[in-house]
Image (cartoon, rainbow, N blue to C red):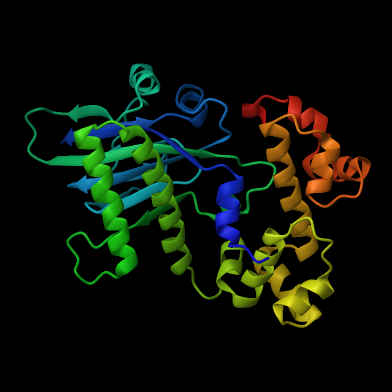
Length: 332
C-alpha cells in the first residue's frame, strides 16, 4: 500500500504543538529566544527537538539567528526556526536583548493558554502584534524532513494581497484562527492552538517544497519527483516488506538502474539503505513509547529475528535497542 511519505514522517516523529505567546509590542522593542535546552524542559518536557515560529498579525518585525543578517517579516507572514536556534525578534534590525527571562517561560509552562506579553515603550507609536509558539518532534535516529529543511523559513499569505491562490488563503485562515483563539481565550483554546500550529507547520513545509529550484536535491526534492515520490510512498506504506531494488523498480515503473541512480541523486542514499534507516526510526518510536518486547518490534518492522534486528539497530543508531529504551527522552 502506497503512503504519503511526508505525512508518515510527520506522524512518526510525533510533531506536537504547545505553549504560546500573544505578543503586543510597541517600538522600540526587542526579544531574544534562549537556547532550546532552556525551553524544552519547561514547556515540552521529554521532547527531543524544538521548532519555534512567529506569526505577524499586525505591523512588522525583524528576525534573525544570532550573528546573522536580519530579515523583515510583515503582517500576514510566518517565520519558522526549524532547529529552534536562539534568535532575535525586534522592531528594528541590529537590536539585541537578554534572552527571555525565566519568569516568562515559567508562566507559559504553568498556563499554556495564550500568554499575553507586552513589550516595548508604552508611549511608542509603531505597534506590532505577533503570535509566537513552539513545536517539538523527534529528531533521532532518523528524521529526513528536519535534515533537509533550512534553519529559517519565511512564507507569506494573501493578507493584503488579492493575487494569492487557494493554498495562500488556507494559510490566511490559520493566521485568523490563531489570532482569534489568542484573543478570546475560550475553553479548549490550548488544544485548538496546538493543532493549528501543527497544521501551520505542515503548510509552511509544503509551501517551501513548492519553491525549491529544479536543481535542488535532498529528501524534499525526492517528494517532488514522480518516480522517487512513488518509491518513497511504497517504502513508507509497507516498511516490513522484504523490498529489493528490482521489486521497487517494477512497482514504480522505472528501470532498476534509473531508479537506483535517481533515488541516490535526490535522497542521498540507495533505496534499501533508506528503508533500513526508516525502520530504525520506527523501532525507536516503539521502543520509546511502551513496553513492547524487542522480538515483537523486530517482526513488526521486517526483521526475521531479534538478533538480526538488534545488530542492525546498533549498527545504524550506535547503541543496542535495550540501551535506547533505557535512555531519558532528552538524551535520545
